[in-house]
Structure formats: C-alpha cells, structure tokens
Length: 374
Image (tube, rainbow, N blue to C red; front, top):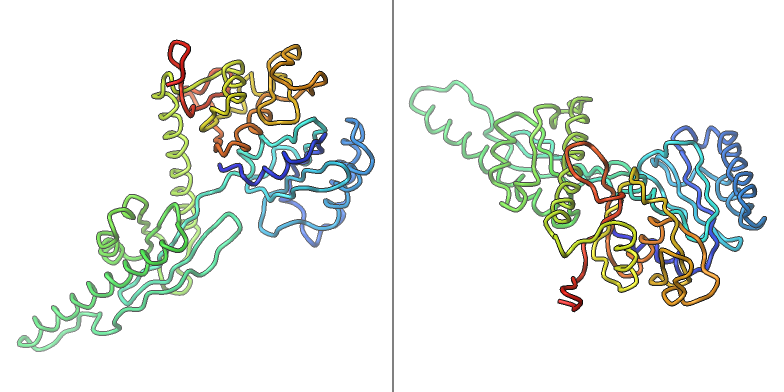
C-alpha cells in the first residue's frame, strides 16, 4: 500500500482521535444507527482523554452522513477540533466502532481495512465483439465495447460447392472479431491499469481472444466458463470467479513481498530495535506489518518528526526533545515509512510462510557491512 495519503496527518502535532467504523449496516435509511455509532465514538474518546472539541467534531462527522457509498466502513482522524482525514474502508472492521486517542494517528489497521483491492477488467465476449466492465472496490462501471463484423458468424447448410468457401468466411470473421476484442482490451488496459483481466464467454471465443492479447497481459488474464455477453448471462458463479481471481492476485502480491524480504538477508531488518534504527536513518524501503505479531503494539517513544523515534524514553539524543510521547511501534514505523515514501504491506500468519520476527520487518534502502554503509 502506498502511504502518501497519510502525509497530511503527520503535518499536525496531535494528539489524535482515530475511529474505524463498520458502515456495513448503516445507510440513508438508518440514521438512528449512525447516531448511535457517533455517540459511542464520542463517549469512548472522551473516556480516553480527548478534548471536547475533537470528540464533538468526530461525532458530527459520523452522525452527519453515511460517508462514501458502496464502502464497508470509514476511518476518521481528527485533532484540535478538526477532521483531517475521512477515509473509506474496503473491509468492515471486526468491531462496530473502534476508537483511539493517542499521540500518533492509529493507522496500522488501514493496511487491512483500506487496502486497495485488485481492480478487475471483465470482458463479456461473443462472436461479434465484447462488452467491457471495470470492477473496483467502490463498484462497477462500463469500460467500453468492442464491435466486430456481424456476418457471417454462423455456419449454415449450403450447396456443396460453396460450403467450403462459406466456412472459411465464418472462420475468418471469428478470428477478425477476436483480434478486435483483444485490441480493445489492450487499449482499455492502457487507461485503467487493471490488476486482473477476466474473459467470460464460450470457450472458443475467450481462448481465441486470450492468445491474441499482448504477452504482458496474458499473465494477468484468467478465463471463466460462467457468464457471457447475452443479456442476463451474468451469474453468481461469475462473481465468485472474479472474486477468486482477485484474491489469488492479492495473495501473489503478499507472497512476492515476503519472498523479497526473506531473500534480502543483510538488506532486510526485523524486530523493533532494528527497525527503529532504520527509521531514524531513513533506510526503510518497504515495511511489513503482521497484525498478530507481538511487537506491533510494543511501546516506543516519539518526537514530532518521523525520524524521532526510540525504543527507550531515555534516548533523548534520538528524540530531539525532553518530553517525548508514547506510541505503538507499528504506528510509529508507519509514520516514518510514509514520510520517506516507503510503501507498507500487511502479512498474516497462515502456517505456510514465515513472517517477520515480532510481526515487524522491512526491506532497507541500503545496508551496512562491518560498520560502513554499502
């Protein structure tokens, strides 16, 4: 996940009210539910020591409307009586309303809750052309159309003398139209940069299109036997196939990230102490956070700048001030990563892959060897 959308938070000194809210059961028809959630968040923030102005502005933001449509939830961050970021979530939080009042904004849950789901480009193919559809975390929309020749596309009985010529004409039309569909998909991909391309339709048409796609797109493309271009052909099974393709893509990304981490050796670091040192020196190139890890909620000490972070409060030479604030390790490291342009990725314990020790790891921008920078 690119973290640049968080940078505006770190330009404010805090402390911060952070609310992750499940909006899955609230909409315009359930203002009472929104009001209840807003009051719950305000009460919780007050109980944690938030100032009245900030607690009230969070209440007003949550009670005033459902937020962006088609989202699973909202993440609201406020300080000094002002909402600084109201971010839609693509995954519902495990609890209805989760609130934090802390020195740094509680952003680590966003790695899972607001992770950018794969964008899918669906091509509904028949012998004449294809309809293209784009599916994003916020909904679906038409992405254009490919229209080929409409005749001849069907084999038909003819006298023996002309049959061979007619069949060749049909075959040529099919092949021509498959080429047009492949070109349309490639042109659309130039604009939308989908993560996954799904071809739906009869086996012959989708395979013919698949092999005509540019090589770079073939690795992104899967086929499904469910659905098609005919009206009403979209099915639950097609939706399941698209969701499965998206999940497999996301899993490949996670595995690729951990492969990079595990193969980096001296070019990687794990554990709070090593990552805090890397953060102070702006060496984090990519951060990995396992929410189940024991070190994610470990206490560290921070100053107002992203590189002012230390394991012990007494390390004032690193903190730049005599009154540092306590913070969670994951949130402190995410601040350092965001402000130096490093992405972050959530990884989870699944028994098949090793995760960083303590749940925190990073690829480094450079490494040290025998006390010298390489």
